[in-house]
Amino acid sequence: MAVAATKTGMRLTLFFRSLAFLAIAIGAFPTALFAQQTPTFVRKFVENTQAPNSVLCERAKPVENKVFWAYGAVYLAKDIEFPDKCVMTKLEADAYQKKLHDEGKVKEVDGIQSYYLQNKASDSLKKVIDELLASVAVNEREMVRFMVPRGCNPNTNKNPLGCDDRRIFNKDWGKRSYDDVLGNWNGRISAAFEILPEDNEAKRLVKIKAVLTANPGVVYSAAIPGASQHLLLAAIDVNSSFCRAASACEKTLMKYGWFRTVRDDKDHFTYLGYEEARLTNLGLVKTVLKTYDKIDYIYYLPGRR
Image (cartoon, rainbow, N blue to C red; front, side, top):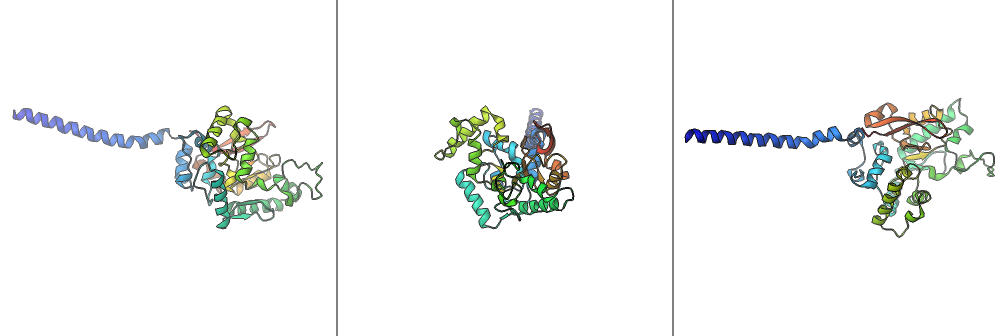
């Protein structure tokens, strides 16, 4: 009886030890799984983002997941004040931009009337402009072409100031309001899915999800309302025919922390504030894409590996 009891006790000890090891293994499993299966960009993003947790898009939600992969590089930007939400409503976007202005975190880019960006982005763009102006290869008239207003043809323009005058720059090439973004979106989708002023947040998201299901690529020509990088005052649009690959314009923008981060949007540069050599360590992948005009453009996109 004593021998049997001893054997039984040993078996129970081994059993409970096994349970303990199993518990430890199970506890470590999620971390190991995250490291093995989570894309590089997500892991690097979590390590390096300066955005608050509340703004980090929930990848389980289709619309926010699309925002994360299409526009998420901006959340790596240095010294940028972020909102508290991934996809903002009109009221939230208006309040966020007003708060930035009220707290002195936004300023006009020196030399460009009504062209507002967050302070660090504004300072950086001013350096780009000054360096291009000082370049022997780029005179002032050529320089200002890199932000010439849409639809301004120098050969037919009737404005006596001319297309290259800074005073007629299109102000929405930097800061955009929620209404600006919404107008661009509604102008590119079916009328049946246009977002209306009376739509509540739930209905708005249902419509956006339906559009993304039917045409996933629309996010690269029109930003999802409430999620544009222009709402953050941390992005600009340029004249891509001037800012071609290896051009003085592109090199200077990249030198001061501006990069193309939205696939196929060759006009769009995002302020990140990093040297180019740092970007791959943040999870971004250098990608060269050829457009319909057969020109190669350099992008830094969230890596899915």
